Amino acid sequence: MAKIILASHGGLSAGMLDSVKMIVGELAEGVETFSLLPGCNPNDYVEELRNKIKNDSQQYVIVCDIKGGSVYNALIQLLDLDNVELISGMNMNIVLDIVIKNVSGNIDIENAMREGKEGIQWKNVNNITDNVDNEDF
Image (tube, rainbow, N blue to C red; front, top):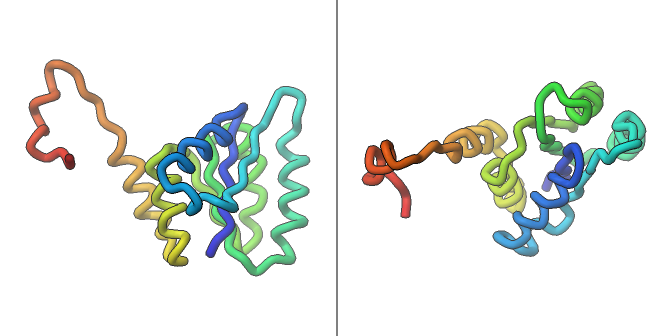
């Protein structure tokens, strides 16, 4: 099993974990969060995490909120370690897929990203009936 870390600006990562726990319960035990709060430096967290990871053989999957943000830019420094994967664009579908698949040790990041993208839909009165037959209920 991989170590999963949700990282964000503000409390998004903590809120995401709370929501994921509502759906999958104990499967989300052990998932960690990092919330960059005002006055904090993300590089401090990166160094702390680097010291933890560099002597660990466990795989780390880090899901952060936004590509190019300060959290992402700091965490990308960890990619010189062989046991780190970094995903940006955190959403519930991505996190749920990773957490559920982690139990069996079969995380598929490409599939998680596909799930995350497919979960993004735009509906309004003009297009709601276009794909109703294709929706999963």
